[in-house]
Picture 1 (cartoon, rainbow, N blue to C red):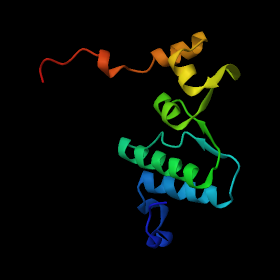
Picture 2: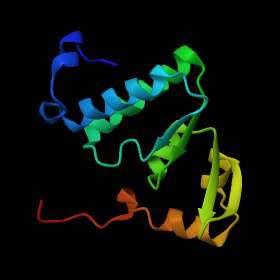
Picture 3: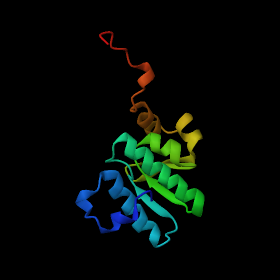
Length: 130
């Protein structure tokens, strides 16, 4: 999990958010679930901790072959962590398919709205005062 053995004796309050998330993942995989359900696994973490946790999950998947189900609103997590995606709207499945196909050529209006809601840093006007 990328944590020293000495962390076993530490109190949860003394761990960072990323460290707590790694402990939670270790606890979850200890029972060898099939699949591992990851509900917003990096939502409350800073960008650096997000990258570390996502890399840890990729390594677990590579090493064990464990299937993972990601529940997230973060489309960048969807794009980098999934092979297939299922889009829900008000509890109904509105689109399902290979991740790249769904995100690159969405067929449902709700999927298109989700994608359009993501800020596009390349299309933002530059602040000329910098």
